[in-house]
Length: 332
Image 1: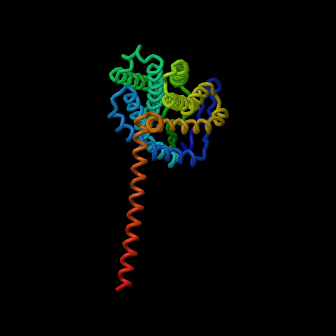
Image 2: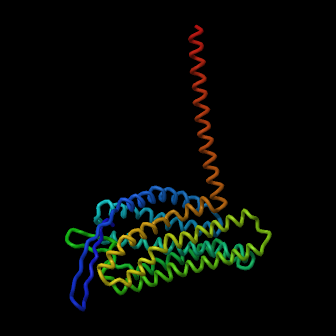
Image 3: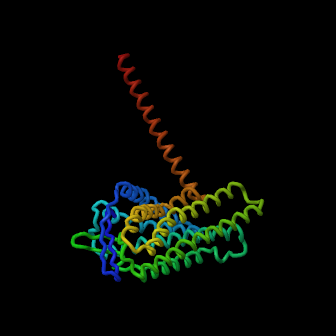
């Protein structure tokens, strides 16, 4: 991702435009490294915890953690790409990496939608749609999401659009031009189905919950805050993590010259880095929003505090013993 080949062939004029653009990768490399260092253990922990949960929210969070974990593992390849400046793993691994990237994007935002809708049904219609909030239903919905996303990616991700090699220089995913008709159509579909629709669903769920909470005076203030935190994090994840990359993908479909591509290159790379933040969505939702997560975080904090106090007490005891021995030696 350090450099990208921007190639355009104008069929009408038989003119070929090739340009190499280098982007300072230090900030992006540091960001990916941080995401990997934090995201891998955090998602492993989340995956372990969600296996033990016995409700529909736990099913969605488990699948979200699984999606984020697969993406985090794939980050090691992108880190190597950034470090070397060229893709050194061949075309098959490149296509597979792009496949994992988009699978994470659309399983994540679909599961975030499911979490928002589930909370809406729980608050606005607690007794009406109980069958939709069962563990079995959540598992079936999660499997359907994985299957649909995998099938969509299988039909839209191609070798031509993902990997390019010129002499000894190869790049993966950083190919801007020429943009195939297949990829152009896929980008439009991704923008609307993968971004606009989820955002509309989350906004609708949030609005419905707002009305339900206001009309229900029995809802505790603490519970209201917890619900609002959950929906705020979900909406921010969709807008901040997936918004920029989808806008850039849509702009790519409108680009037909190298100058415009060069102008879009740096924002495009930044948008990819921002989208990688979604690998921290599940740990954030679990640790700071759900009751179980908050309880477990508090237990960890108390454990660390107790361990620190224990070490301090042991240190004080050792000093007291040392002073006592010195006093006895002097008295002798």
